[in-house]
Structures are given as structure tokens and as C-alpha cells.
Amino acid sequence: MKRDFSVKIQDDEPMNHLKQSNKTILVAPLNWGLGHATRCIPIIQALLDHNYVPIIASDGNALELLRKEFPYIDMFELPSYHIEYSKTDKYFKWKMLISIPKIIKAVLAEKKLIQQWITKYEIDGIISDNRLGIYSAKIPSVYLTHQINVLSGNTTWFSTQCHRYFIKKHNECWVPDVAQDPNLTGNLGHVKNTSLNIKYIGPLSRMKQKELNKKYDLMVVLSGPEPQRSLLEEKLKNEVLKYKGKVIFIKGIVEKTQQNETFKNVTFYNFMNTKQLEQTFNESDLVLCRSGYTTVMDLVALQKKAFFIPTPGQYEQLYLAKKLENEGLLPFSLQEDFCIEDLSKINNFSGLPKIDFKTNWNDLFKVFEKM
Image 1: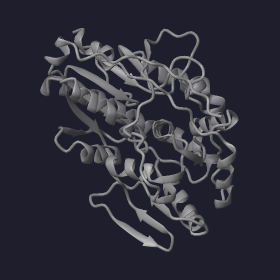
Image 2: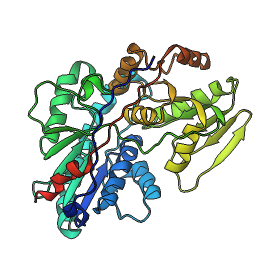
Image 3: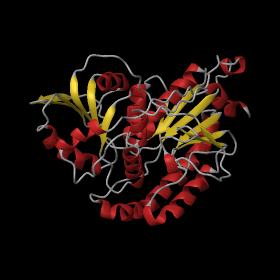
């Protein structure tokens, strides 16, 4: 039986001063997989609905995805953090450590850029999704994250303190979850004592649940940095051919042109836009995917049962997968252990609960009206 933890917040009609705003807000998601970019989509849409003028800055696949979603919005390229995973989780932390100089260089570069852009493009506010150099003391700055605590094994305290150092430079920290227990992020997004100005804004998703006829028995959705995305793709390409049912397989590679091919019982796509993804999710019975937090929020919105394969070495995804399995909601398997027969375990879990949370954008956007 599903647990229903509901929070109802009424979203009032836009206030007059918000209707007349026309302020320019920079939205800058991190290019680490596609989750940071996709969870910014409902924020960008809310800004448009409340008469703000969003502009977008990112790099790589994240920028390309948002360009396809909002072709009429100004886009700017930021320096890449050059985040890459190791081929095995054993060397994940070492790979991240040797990437630190590149990340610092990118953070310093984007920090310099943002100061120039504020004047050049008359930016009135900032929403940074885990981009460490995107903030300013001159204008209201908001930091979007679900990781107040950054899990990294025996270096968790250090990685958490480093992250909070940057969060504190912003006026507010928006956490896409509910404040009370039970919640989705657990220890990642909740702390007992902190000086951070945290606001829980409810789960974010660009998806909506729809009653559509079932077209696929299984939907496979890949995401995340290389080489782990490709490694999982190669593994699952072989596994899904053993599946007794119709499969749609989205590789998570954002390219200029959408491509698809069908082999036996499986239809492959390189990527899908939001409208196509939403329809395909609603037409699918089960989902096989990573346990990234944005994916968790999408599954909550769509009320879909899923099976998780956490990215090797990514402590956050492993924590979320274990948390949801221990709560009897969704099962998971380590990447090296997964076989297609594991999907039968889904029947023993209740699925993610429905969360009735109406984000009050009027209240959240007040931060941009204070200067």
C-alpha cells in the first residue's frame, strides 16, 4: 500500500507587482548529466508565466537540451567543468580529485563572466543549479540543490563543507523536496541546524501524468556523464533483447537531429524532447533508469514503477536507491550485477507515493523584488 505524504500549498494569482515585473533572471544549470537542466525547465516556465524574462547559461548537452526546449530564449555558453567518471567505481573519487583544478578554473572563469553579464545584459536576478561561480552580491542570487549534505564516503564532511561555502554566497537555497518527514531526499536535503536560508519548494518535474493506452512494456532511460552512460548502454542493449515485451530505449545523447531505429523488440532513440518523453513515459508500463534525483521527481509526478541502476561510484544515487528500496518503494541493482530478470522484483514494491505539493512561485520570486 502506498504512503501518501501530501502538502497542499495554494498558488495565488500573480500579484500586480509580479505581473509588471519584466525583470531579467539568469538560470544556469550544471552540465552533469541532464538532470540539472531538465529540473530547471519548470522554473524557467514559471518565470515566463509570472512575466519575468529568463535567459539561460550552461554548456554541453545541458545547454543543447534547453536550446531545444526554449528556442526563443537567449542562451549563453559557460565554461565546462569537464566532469568525467571513471570506468569503475573503485577509481571514482580519484577521478574527481584530479578534476578539481579544471573545476576551479571553470568556476573562476564563470565568476568573472557573470560580473560582466550583469551589466551587459541587465540581469536582475540569478538562479544557479549547482554552478559554483554563478552568484553576485549586487543582485539577488538563488542556489538550487537537493544536496545540502554531499555524500562522498569518508570525505563527506569535507565535501559538504565545501558545498555549503558556495551555497552561503546566495540569498536563498531552494531545495526541490518537502520539508517534513517522510520526504524524498532524506539526509541529502535535510539538516537539523544550519545558518543557510533554505526554502523547500516541492519536487520539480517537467512531466505530467496522463491516462494513455499502454504502448510499451518497458522504457529504458539513460543519462549521466561519460563513460558510465555508454557502459550502461552497452550492457542494457544486450539485456533488453532477452526481455519478453516491447521496449523503447532512450540513450540520452542530445544531438542536432533525432534518430531512431528498431531491432527485434526494441526501438532505440538518441534523445526525446519533453513532450515526446512525457507521452512515452505515460505509454510505458515499467521504467529502467538511473537513480538520479531528477529522475526520482519525474517518477513521482508520473506515478510510474521503476527499477534503478545507480551510477557506479556516485554516492548520492546509491544512497537514494537504498533509501527507496528500504522504504519498500522501488528496487535497485548495482550495475555489474544487473540482469533483465531482476525487473520482476518491481512487483514486490509499492511504487513512489503521490505528493500533492503546489509550489508557490509568487512567494519564491519575491526574492527578485527586494532590490
